[in-house]
Every structure is written in structure tokens, then in C-alpha cells.
Length: 451
Image (tube, rainbow, N blue to C red; front, top):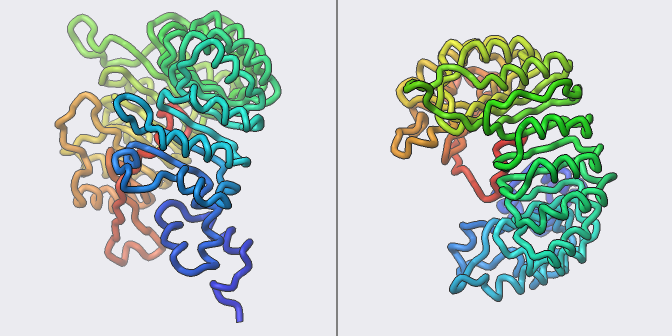
């Protein structure tokens, strides 16, 4: 007789592929066969974040676990390091030893992330993985160390979060070695990056489908958009606008573009009054995407200072892309309630919406959003400049109000919580069961990437 415990291991692995996190750990305790099926997923990604560092040495690091149980190393595909424990300002020796030993053991490693400034010590074990596909690092390196990093020529995804001038200087020659492989490129808060370097390296990367240049103060948005003539296959584009410089004339079309993110730095006050408008570039960009015939499915806009947004811009955005938009995020905006209603009514495929909802207006906004028949996830982005403001969904009552009034809504994301509920076919005849989970920030992704 077939039971769950004697299912073929391949069947178990297919089932467990739908589980994550704590669910995987719970299933592993059921039986030996379940544990064998879960292990490849439990150890697929090794993560070390601030929570792990705070509990050291009470808990063993995942790297030490792999070193002591070497058979687990074959399952590791990704290593994600967000912090490193320090002793008198120096990385802990035992931690670094276990990390380096673990990296050497993980022969199937595909993606590597390292945010603390410990990369120089990891260059040797990294070079043991010439087929590494994804790399995200904070690269403060010497010239010699940079040349060693640049030997990695088969990357499909490269993300640099701040780096030294030595790394910036070698980017054009490094890019020329990744012409056939690299499809995703992210530059984030690199103050040494400039227009000349970007214009020199992008001609080597015709296969790019994702380009993000965000927070790099020496790179003009006009340069980024003009340089996209070398990357006609782009599907995702993110950049920072520092001023009101107009776009370059005769821009090449990006017909495959599906996601765009614009980080806008503008003066919050004009002639003593807050802006009640939108940046002229936004109108131009939306008009361009419409003329290119691209079907935007996702847009993210962020302002450096909280500012009201013009309803006219929302109307232009929806006129161009209401039939295809599935994700809209507006960070640091005061969105007119009329615009919220228009978004809920006109966006036929809207699944995810992110903006700030005032605590006192939860009932009002829930009545506006009920016009959407497809909205599945709502994110309250909060107020970045109001540290003591009451969050809109600080209590269960407000969460329940939103969930009940928006029939299609299944997930509500706040600053520190993720609320979910089961809305099966007969949910309206039963009491609504809300499930809160603490929002985990173990592996935060860039805000400007598509969701």
C-alpha cells in the first residue's frame, strides 16, 4: 500500500518544492524519508544575516554546519552573506575560516552575495567557481584584487553595491569578457561611476535584459537612456533622476520593456509651496513607452521627499498601460483619493499595489480599492520621514476591514508584518481567518527590481 512515507524520493522533492522556510523545517521532522526529500531545499541557499550574528555563538552558522556535514555541500546553490561578526573591528576568525571552507566544498554554487567588506578574503575560494552565474558584492578592492575578481567571465547577473575606483576603472574591459553571458547589470550607490565608463562598457553587452543604475550621483539619466541604444533587448530598466535635464533626442525604441523604476531627487518646495505636480520627465517617459508599443506590466516610482502627485500623470499612465499593468508602486507620494479609485477601476490585471495609506483613512481607502476585481497584494509603504507616525495596519481590526472590503485581496504587507487570509469559494459565509507573520528582512532585495 502506498503511503506518504514510502513515496518515491523524486515525488517527495516535487511536493516539497512548493514549501519554504519554517514549513520545510517542520516537514523534515516527520520521518527519515521526509527529511531526505527536504534536505536539498533546506540547504539550497545558505543565509547569514544580522539575526544570526546577534545570536552567535549560541547557534551554529550554516557554513559550519556544511563543513561538519560535507554531504550537504552538494545541495548548495546560493550563499547570501548580509553581515559578518566582528571582534575588535576585525571579522571573526572562526566565522571566516568556516565560510571559506564551505565555499570550497560547494562545487555546485551558482549565486553569491556578500554585502560586508570581507570580499578580499573570499577572492581565492570564489575563483574555485569559474562557472558562477550570479554575483552581488560590495567591492572595495585594490587594483590587484580587482584584476582577480574580473577573471569571472561567465556571469549572467552582476550587482555592485558601492565599490572602489579600481573596480569602476576595470568595468569596460571586464564587460568585454561577459559579452555572451551577462543579461542583468545593477550599479547601486557607486559614487565613482561616471558617464564615460557607462558609455564605454554598454556596447559590450548587447544581450542585457535588465539594467539598473540607481543612486550613482555622477551618472546623468540622459546618459543612461541614450546608452540603451546598445541594449535593445531590455525588459527591466531603473535609473535615478538628479535634475530636470531633458531626454536626449531620437532615443532608440525599447519595445520589449516590461518594468521601469524611476528614483527621483527633486526639491520638495517650490516658491515656498510643496509640489502639487509630477516631474516633467515622467510624462515624457510614459509618452515614449506608449510610442514604442511596449506593454509595461510593472512600474515603481520613488521621490526623495514626500510630495503630492498630479492626477494628470496617473491618467496618462493608465491611458497608456492600464490594460497590462500588474504592479504599481509609488513610494513617498501623496496620492489623491480620486487617483486610487481610477487605478482600482481601470487596471484590468492589477495584482500588486504599493503606496502609503494613512491610519485614519483605512476604511475610506478600502472602499476605493474594492472596485478592483484582481488585486491580490496590497503593500503599505509607510512614511519614511515620519518616525512616530501610527502605521495604517497596526491592529487586526484595520487589516480585517481591508480584507473584507476588497474581495480579491489575499495578502497585506506592512513595514513589519505580512497578513494573509484564505479566501476560498465560500469564505464570505465563514468568519475570515487572518494569519500574521513577522516580515523577514534576512535577504532584502533592491526596491527598484520587478516583483
